[in-house]
Picture 1 (cartoon, rainbow, N blue to C red):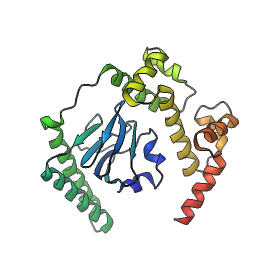
Picture 2: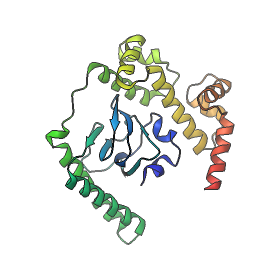
Picture 3: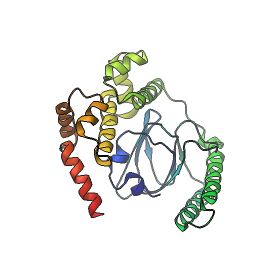
Length: 260
């Protein structure tokens, strides 16, 4: 799929911290921006391959002129997949062409709907997995050692991603990680440019927007699910961060779908 298809045409679906149920390979062919993954924020540019294992927190902020392709591989795949997020800056033109050719061919096959399409897509997935493994084996793509701040922020990102739908505060998360809120905030700020509280807020905000725009679950039930003390508090939270009430967000999403 394309980047707009992954984001469903809504920038917040990529820019807010979240995870994905599939393994993702994002191939950026034009533009630049930043990605938050593995507890740190890094620059992204043309001919960068972003490998994001399933259920890993990430946020991608690219300019509107950016172009990219996305390969989603099911979490239960038997293919060999990286266990940690990786950013590969591809400089070899042959490797660039190989990946672009595989993705384009897989896209054509997917759209064809021909007999044995599913088996063919499995084969393309295997070839793309081989491409990733070959790149990861190169010395130029050897992962750099994360500093203490990035390691702590990475653990925090994993913790909030697993527990965002609870009434845990940032201080509660810090306590679970065995550090003070001040130390956690300092580490997150150094690694990502965001405070620990901001990362938690944005993860909750992403889930709230997904539930409001993708389901018909009542707002009060969404509030309860996400650990808000009341529907009124949830409404204030959404208005503060989106300048719209839950009802207005839901209505705007429905209108956009009808227009499409």
